[in-house]
Image (tube, rainbow, N blue to C red):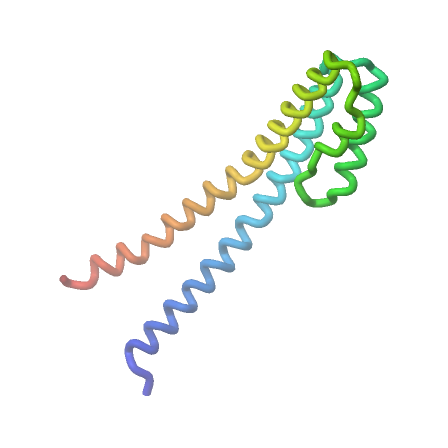
Length: 145
């Protein structure tokens, strides 16, 4: 005794929920894998930037330790490297310029890693959205205008 609109509405809601579940099931492992991969790549690149920086070795060690503490303190969040650089800022203006360049390079590397971690997930989500249009197109072909 249900009306046609009620049945159609039920199927629409069920399809929407199924799409959300499918999206979560497909995108979560993909995103987590990409995030883990980009985290490791950013650590390697950041280490390389630190080692190649034009600052004294003793400063590199202190700064590396401070950055490691910042990374450990942030847990699963994007780290803020500013406190590590402020705490280890040299008085020498020549070294300060090298510290500023290194901080900017490390911040850029973090942004790049975050962007790359989302890239595949966004692509797959877009493809899923396009796939959701297939039933609409098929239904439209069956319904006479």
